[in-house]
Amino acid sequence: MKEEALEMEGVITDVLPSATFRVTLENGHAVMATLCGKMRRFRIRVLHGDRVKLEMSPYDLSRGRITFRHKT
Image 1 (cartoon, rainbow, N blue to C red):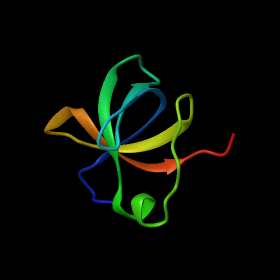
Image 2: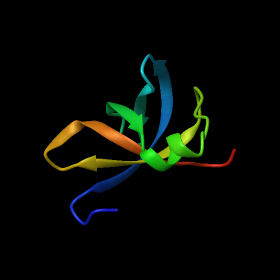
Image 3: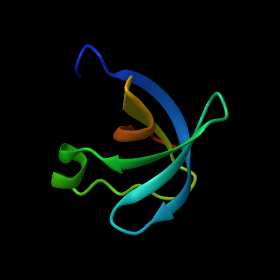
C-alpha cells in the first residue's frame, strides 16, 4: 500500500459493468471502486453484500480500489 492512500472499509451495494462496484463506506458515503490487480489475477469473486477493504487516493475521494474481501 502506498503511504498516501487512505484505507477504508465498506459493503458492496451495487455490481456495475466492467468490474466496477458501488461501495457504501462505514461513514455512509458511497464510492465507485474497481478490483486491484492481484484480486483480478487470482480471480477473487466479489458479490453484492460482501464486506471489503479499499484504498482511496486523498485527491479523489469518489473512487477507490478494492484490496481485500472479508470472509463471511
